[in-house]
Length: 290
Image (tube, rainbow, N blue to C red; front, side, top):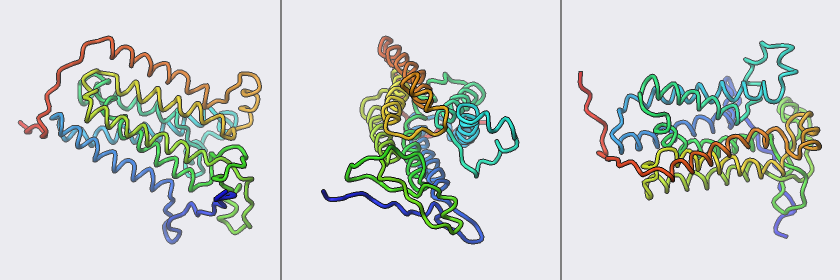
């Protein structure tokens, strides 16, 4: 074998001086920056107002952070946070759930579509989920840098040994490594990158945006189907999930993925059963008029 395993000793901190910059936060920021540029190109391609971009970015950022935090609180550790609700605000302690982030983004898109764009939310979803797939991949790289959300022990040659208590290690304790384990962060990142490529191809090469809801449906179905499958290789995040697996054969992440997969399939079928909508592509932002 080329590798026995990889001892992963990456420091979650990119900069640790008078300010601390973590890789996880940097991946978030890079994702939003690249996502903004992709949306800018799409909006210009379709002649949507440039001023919408900033408003949409604010709604999406707020929905992502608030939704991901509340998703973790309510789906995974309500028994802990209900005893000390102020800790819900302590995001720097960790605890974000992608399913909650998805719900938050959906609410943000609904608000943007109804209040600002005054268009069907499907118009926004079909264009927004393209960069979101890329953002998801970058966030999983951030999880890798944080030594978190990794998988079960394995003898695969690409297995990683993660520092099991990263906070203690950062405060000077000797590192204690996990058994060689599945780097499920990389599995998910690769899946999301492939999905990003597919959605870009659907939009730019196949004009799939002419079937409202199709790109959105493919995004939901494939993203959460991949998440469902990879969860079988992951360690459960909280204790009650062990009982869920024994009783239902799935953990919380998988249970929360099922509704999104079904919703995605619904939008795919709906889009394919309806005639395509003709669109024009002026490839410029509209001229502002007073």
